[in-house]
Length: 255
Image (cartoon, rainbow, N blue to C red; front, side, top):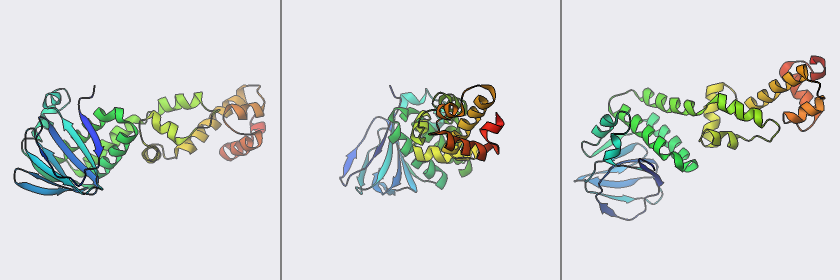
């Protein structure tokens, strides 16, 4: 059961006025929402966020084309997470706050992840709260960006990816499959993977295939055609060409 409720919403052109018994964080990635709390009104945009403490009356009206992350935070659950008391202090009063580029980029990335993997809403919510706490407690914007990159890098577990690849070298491997193993969207996985490894995911897969093939070429009696099939090449010719480009020697000579 999730500790928090995190949703990506489109807030409609409909006036809503209410209170609720949980804190709420509102961040937009596009569009805007007019929001007021206890006489203080502003526009929530990609550059302006909002913190609504529990039991505070507020009203809002969306533009009908916004994309907004709404995070509901039951007060009792804050005690169960790391630095929950620091996050609780964010809600000591109603407030609007400027959203720096690093936090905006992180919000975009996490909104995409939420849509891809709704079951990760707890992890995404905690990351958002940690990033916001760092920013509002005078951390540098770069630290907020580094937090996001660190958490993404943790998901790119190359040992686990290598183990999966080694079991599927003969298959047609797609970036979407690799991204799903890390609970990331394909686009975000691609950029993070390249930043971490220096190569694209498909280039990494090709390298893994060829390195495995070289072991078989040198230490097995399998035919080159059979090896090509085992590591995912459609025929021996394409395998031999790729092998020569990568190792600067043909597989028959290497053998």
